[in-house]
Image (cartoon, rainbow, N blue to C red; front, top):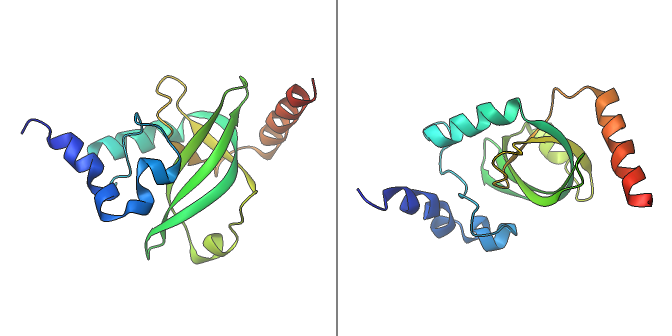
Length: 145
């Protein structure tokens, strides 16, 4: 089955052109959105690693509904404590209430994997508000200088 993994990674882009690498604003190294992250061992592993990832701030750019669970792909402009900026993609299951509260320009805490840097992030729902504020202050002071 040589080349099988590439075909699966490109499946969502074929089925949903709005979820292609180009449409999401990420580069060619982005592995793609999994058709079903519960059935993908790579997606399960990635999500487990992201839960313990490094905290960063993401400004919500846009989102795309994948299904009516509602599973959404959120696009963020991410800024890290180290001064790295990148387009981050979060594949999340949200409640209807959370979905209705989304607005472009919102700043939300996210987690990323600095060793991988594959554009994947996850919402940091468990982040300590004091740590998020401290990170926000660090980023803001860096931008002023």
